[in-house]
Amino acid sequence: MLITGAELTAIVGSFLWPLFRVAAVVMTAPVFGAKTVPSRVKLMISLAITAVIVPLLPAMPAVEVFSLQGLYVTANQILIGIAIGFTTQLVFSAIIMAGQIIAMQMGLGFSLMVDPQNGQQAPVLSQFYIIFVLLIYLSLNGHLVLVHIILDGFTTLPIAITGLSPDSIWQIVTWASYIFSGAIGIAIPAIASLLVVNLSFGIMTRAAPQLNIFAIGFPITMMLGFALVLLTLINVAPKSNELFINVYQLVRGFH
Image 1 (cartoon, one colour):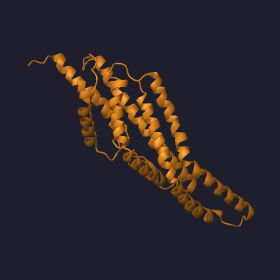
Image 2 (cartoon, rainbow, N blue to C red):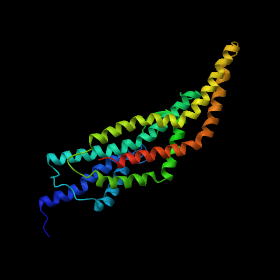
Image 3 (cartoon, rainbow, N blue to C red):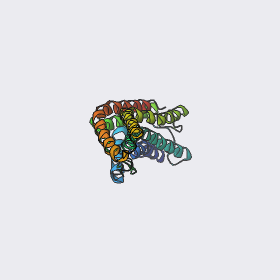
Image 4 (cartoon, rainbow, N blue to C red):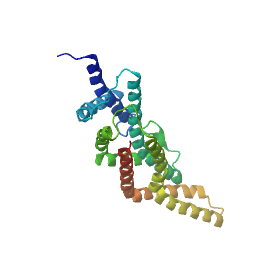
């Protein structure tokens, strides 16, 4: 059995190009791309997913792997993978922003800790929401749905010299602005309630200036904020699920 150089490079390309796309998704997607996950584990996950999906992929382009065109194909696969993972990660950015807004209203904006997802400091309340939404994401098999979307992406957006279309890039930019509305949608009940409380404290200050409103208002605002978080927690699950559904529909539409 003889294998020519062209056949060998074709075999390498049939595994290498999907690996670049999958590895880029794993490095940037939620759960897989967390800072707490070692790089070796990420590499093993990428190799395992690629080994499973390669036999199911369509034919690869007739391009030399180690040529200039092959370099373009590799770069496009990395950019596509980053786009998929980054777009999915924006959902968790919306959750972090919602927690920051509520924490600022409660007076807990100074209480920070390191977020294990991205390695950045975020309010403790944001960490609570992140853990809650992450458990929802895993319970709904969101990580497995992402793997299925990666497989479907090789059909809707096959491996080729061309990459993402301008329309898909513009959709990603538009979706990035959607994190603000998603964060407000989660935090709006607590924002409205705490705004009423702050207005009440303002009226009390005008009616009785001798009261130390800071000593009285801070613990009341904090306790009421925790009560509102507990009461509105039931609305976080459907809202986050809606965000995940929307982002997966967006990723499936890449072309």
